[in-house]
Length: 339
Ligand SMILES: Cc1ncc(C[n+]2csc(CCOP(=O)(O)OP(=O)(O)O)c2C)c(N)n1
Ligand SMILES: [Mg+2]
Image (tube, helix red, strand yellow):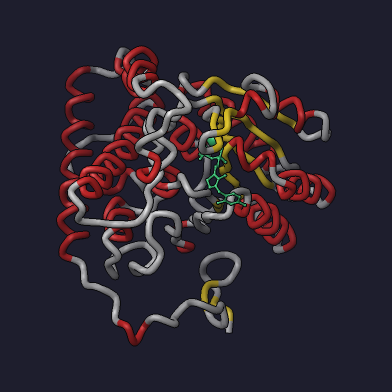
């Protein structure tokens, strides 16, 4: 639980139960994104930004099921995946400010957060791109005799791309320990996923028909996401791929550039949140004093991160070509150096 380290500095205690851990992580993800959105609205940062408001149970439930040496690939809506794997709030927010203390040294922005030393192999703006990275990374781990696994998060839209079938077939054929996570939020930008696949759960049926173990979970229940995640992670660690579809709700527009959308009612997201907010649903199982301790620790961590991000140094132009080609860097396990 690398993500909890920052919270511990603010006397949050042990986060003894799964419910407390889920609540804290989901709140941290939501608060990091809320800070980014406020800053964006105030025009202090630019570039696109895809909010995962309402969807946090998927990133939180899966992240809690993973080990530190497991690796994750992500998509364009990946701040939650990054925070869950242990990329700090400061590194995520500073990346939005394009500062050198950002996770990609300020040269990536919202859709290119990565930190291989915590096993976050990165986001991509290419829908479905991370699926192939993950099956390859899983196979590499197996070849090196490690029992670490790879996890690929992707949206429902990615599962309409050819790479989806390729990545899953290859992982199955090579028995690569890869967990494919479909965050089905019902939309690929303005395209409703039920018009393509059918109702939520249909993508699970497609993957089952490929003979890969598949589970469908309602993301309103974060504990259920975690429990199913644990079962599948344990199975994948034995050297098999698996698939999980988590039905989530995209509360916001597709991105900050999609503010004038007309393809669904404007208030629909807020109404869903009022009724089903997975963070609020967890409150009943956490002591009120602990809820407050978590809330104030999260808010302190995000305030510190915002401060550090806005004070970070801008990248030097002389450094612009660094990292374009991978001639040197971290090896497959994040430690050895490739020369
Ligand atoms: C290969 C590719 N095709 C199309 C796009 C344009 N595009 C960006 S996000 C997006 C929708 C993706 O939907 P989904 O995978 O369900 O993720 P969500 O945004 O719902 O989280 C599309 C079509 C792209 N970036 N890459
Ligand atoms: Mg989607």
